[in-house]
Image 1 (spheres, rainbow, N blue to C red):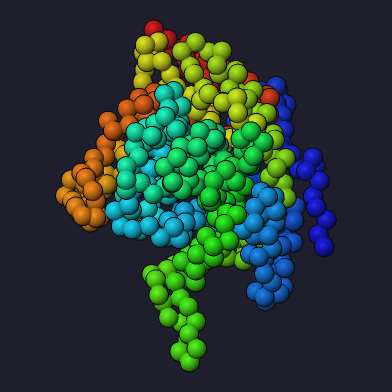
Image 2: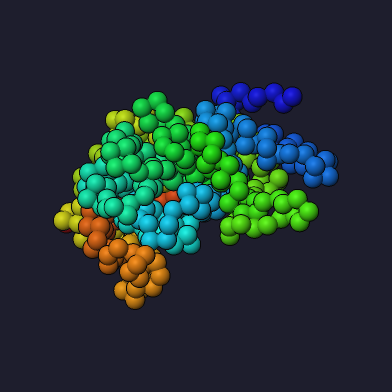
Length: 419
């Protein structure tokens, strides 16, 4: 039996000033901080001749860490959400309300199952939707609400779940950026019927790749494995496999599971550290006139931040967000950029093409009315991202010195461009 790694032993690596007192570079995720048992678990896979059930071990460990009954490991986050979309087994043309600020991986499964994504707007001044923005989108064809905990900030789930119960809707979570974030003492991924997670190399609990689905629903877990991993096949006596639905083979590789298991042993300490650092950086950035960091809600007990961001007040600066981000990156913050690509109604142009041309399932029927997709359909999200600067390299290597250094870089750019 492997001894559990003491969490305090494997916290973030502190950044130190150079010999001449010059500030060191802002850290990036890579090279990753790796769990000390990663190589041991990989060696087990090799030494066993691929007979060890490392996937099963990881699934059990992750489910126990979250306090859920089922974890179904997948090769990535997009397959995780795709298996969920298939397992819900809605009808073509059924509507799924989804966050407007997300990633294509959130939508891919919906599109492939011929469901119709309906984007609720973001709550004003935030990156997430809310019960208030969801409610106007509900129709008699709505079947589910897919919430995205963008940057690691969990959506306000209690009002969303209450609204869903009122309309008999399923709620599920894209928790890919929120691994071990905490909402009112409850972990992301445990706040709804099911959730998808990401263990891609750049994510909070980074392996080489990987993802999973978690749920407490026994029947749903069985359908996820059937649709997502057994290729929709049932064994028939005297025949063999019969594929009764068009399923998938989305199985996590054993070596990926080995790294995930090793990373799981150190991630909780890293998340505690991320939470402390992002709150510090948020407070420092908030002191800069004209700069507003992503607000951290009071209900968020632990902010497992993967992406840090802020908006600029265009009235106070002589440059737009794109130029501001460029200067922040040139100042030393790796990968600082604008976030317009995360506005899914604008980024997924194929949806507008399909809706305009009434391509199935946008033909009537199965669609019940005409749909439109553009930035203007979600004005709160559009306006927020118009002035949004972010970087996805906020990581467990940040220290108080790092946060001070980043804030100084942002302040210098702000002062340089102030009207």
